Image (tube, rainbow, N blue to C red; front, top):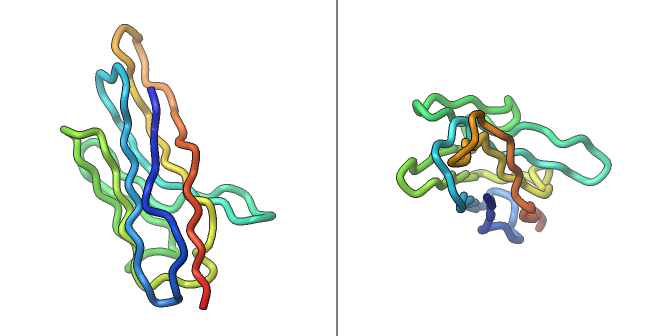
Length: 120
């Protein structure tokens, strides 16, 4: 199973970016999907999470600016980021709890990360 992110890049303050993550492999079911981020010298932090039923939760620092969404049929999760600030600069990681065919439990997987840099 792989999680592959795309959509990172360089943007000016106030701008927008959309991150995408696609899960591939012998997937039976995906429960939680989430985006984390890690800035230099800081711990990795949860940005947003979406459950299989569609309920979402966001870090206080991104509420009202970021929107997480998923496509269950395509096994993808997106993060729409608006009104970006320099403090949003970080490597963003896709994360998911995936039930692989033939296994009997959900296991946690991470993507390789995509850099988001917000600067003027």
